Length: 155
Picture 1 (tube, rainbow, N blue to C red):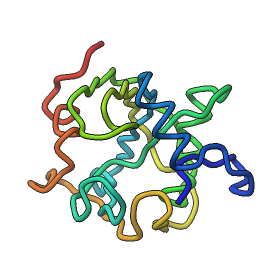
Picture 2 (tube, rainbow, N blue to C red):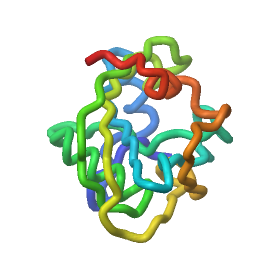
Picture 3 (tube, one colour):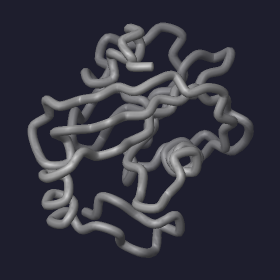
Picture 4 (cartoon, helix red, strand yellow):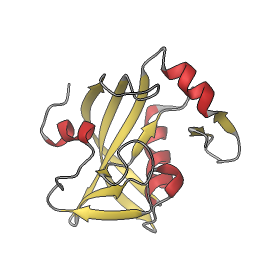
C-alpha cells in the first residue's frame, strides 16, 4: 500500500518504506476537515490503520509543494466525494504520542468546511467507505481527534 498520492491518483509519491523513513525523522503536516451542515458533522468509519473501526474526520497529509487550502479541498474530494467551501481555520492540534513512523509527530491543521456539491461517497484507500453525519459526536471517535471537539486547539 502506498501512503501518499498525486492529485491524479496515478503517480506514487511515497512507498510505505519511504514514508516510514521520512516521517520517523520529521513532523508530518496534515489537515482535518470538520465538514458541517444542518445534518451535523460528517465522519468516516475507519477501515485502514491506525484505529480501525473508529469514526474520524476526513483529512490527511499535505503533499510536498501543495498549498494547505488545496490539500483541504483534495482530501474532501478523495475521502467524501464532496466539494467544500472552507469557512474558517479552527486551529492546530499537535500529536506526539503515536506508535510508528508517520504517526509519531503530527501537526494537524483543522478547518471548518461546508459541503457545496458532489455525491457523498467514501473510499477505502483514504480511510473508509462508511460515511455518516452526526449531531452528537460518537464515543468511538478516533482518540487523537477528541481534542478538536473538546476545544483544545492551539490558535
